Length: 207
Image (cartoon, rainbow, N blue to C red; front, top):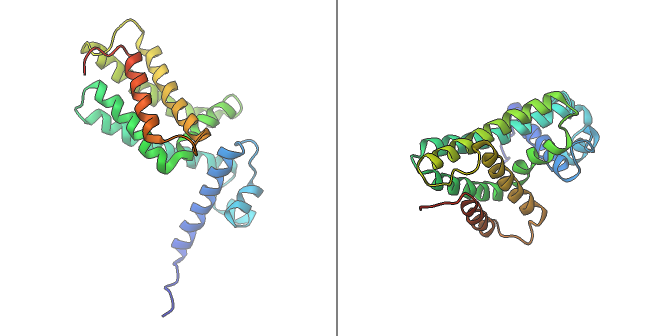
């Protein structure tokens, strides 16, 4: 029996995913500035013209990937907000999410971190996209911090925005270190260590 032929829509979606996967791998491993449409097409097993058929250029590919990463973060932030859990538990849930999601989407979570270092100040649209992502990230960490201080769970000797910035830096750093030594570090053990460091730094007074 002959296998069913893919529809045009299925072939189109498959090709788009091939291009996105190739772009993600190259943006992370080689750097956004060093990746070219030629190398992306070769990695995807498609022609350069095929890549341009689906995406206007390299920046369009990057924005599509950042949209995917942004959606992942939006989902976990919504879950945290609606969970009804206390701020300590919400932070633990977030770090656990980083470990679980990073196991399946490590490059996608690392991409915004790397591009924020490579493209900020060079591409206004990319910078604006990243700012929107990180503003939401900082706002969520600030919300959790503010709630924890109000409940007397975290000490209040550090300003909320600066503490939120440190929480972002710690979780970003954890993801980067995991990617850098992915063959040697266990994601779950890394998350447990991160939670201990974060809660200790917050001056947690109750569990």
